[in-house]
Image 1 (cartoon, helix red, strand yellow):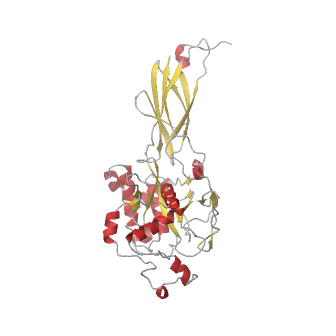
Image 2 (cartoon, helix red, strand yellow):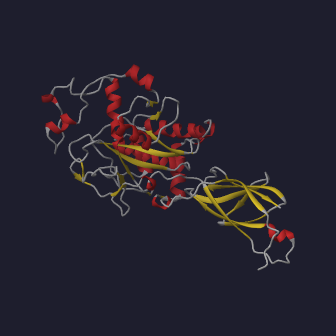
Image 3 (tube, helix red, strand yellow):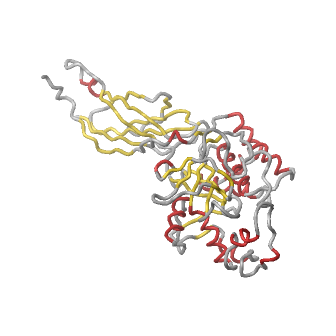
Length: 390
């Protein structure tokens, strides 16, 4: 067999993010017109343009949603669609639960091109009683290249002692291990100074509890922290991160739901630890979920590009230049994907819409960069292939 010995290539650099097999589990509503309407309704474009970086933009969005409403824990809004929720909050027709705060923040993030997920939190024993659940938002942070948790009800995010921003998973791991010492809530010094006390078993009279219809006094009593004080209040809220329930479908029109999840044909994914039985009910209400112990279905990296390649075929008598062609096979994990951008040898970025791109290599060092761009022009991190050619 004759071999083409002209192909003397060496891989010198290879950085990319493989597309997770679970990427398509999460369905991001494209609905560009509704996203545009919600973007304009918030009037936040100038504030985001002035923010220093994408992390500051995300905090601006959370602060905006937090400021739209006071909090109440009982009455659900008649609709969870972003435009409707925003209008009802602005004219005082609704007061938000954690559910409304989270659903609106997720949709506002989507309107500005940030992928975010609604996450239901479950305390130990969430199948019975009351006050066993909370709802927050997991947002993909381009700054940190990871999911991070935002709690719009409290206008809060969490860090470790070194300043690293934490994800819902990282909080859940700490809760299960009983390690709370290195968790710092944003604004904690101010919250501690302004803390006005929280209803707890050691500062509340059992006989004077307010008992909602359908529950008994003992259930309400068990829903309270054992002790008052800021440190106990803080730990009580962190303990909600014991189990995580992820909504997977994100239309911008969504019906009201008592437990914060839709009644459509894409039930949320409920993660429970291997060897642990998950609850069948949520506070005695039936729940339709898909149970999983596979963390990789939920901890899905976004916005990256996976790059594979194949040398272009060339006859043995073809000129040398024909043996220096390579086909890039591209796969992305960019929500609201619009196009790729490719740069060769430090040159300018060129837009490319298909998932295959032929590149002509030069003799010597070649450095190819590829990134995915969404429909609002937000680019993900670059994948890099470095090749030395004979």
